[in-house]
Image 1 (tube, rainbow, N blue to C red):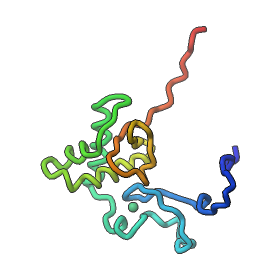
Image 2 (image 1 turned 30 degrees about the vertical axis):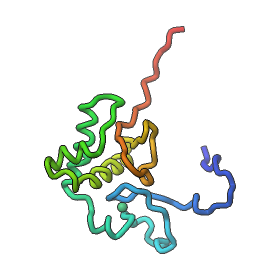
Image 3 (image 1 turned 60 degrees about the vertical axis):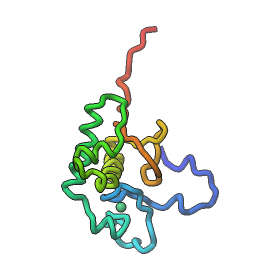
Amino acid sequence: MSRGGSRTGRGSARDALPTKPCAVCGRTITWRRAWERDWDDVRYCSDACRRTGVSPVDADLEAAVLRLLDARGEGRTICPSEAARAVGGEDWRPLMEPARAAARRLVVAGDVEITQGGAVVDPSTARGPIRVRRVRRPPEPERVPR
Ligand SMILES: [Zn+2]
């Protein structure tokens, strides 16, 4: 019930720093001393994210990811580019990175997970092509006849 059982005691204090997700790109923000006083108010990982914010297009991308996943069916994945195309039409390429950010925000929200080669990866650090799928709900307890 208390946490911290898995710490391996390598003496790295960095592991213990608090983190939170960026409200825009969904990447992990790690506590810095500069934020000592206003950590609770920190929402963005960078000035770029603060300037960009979450636009209506970004909300559309999130909705498109979920819509595409629901259309594809249980356990199936989509590429973020499909959401970019669904929202941007012919002009989808500039929406590619925003689509990946939308997927990361959905990971933060607990709706989806991001995979590479079929394995779930940390969206903050994943490089290269990613797939997105719905988080699998824990299955209903099944009564197995003995
Ligand atoms: Zn960010």
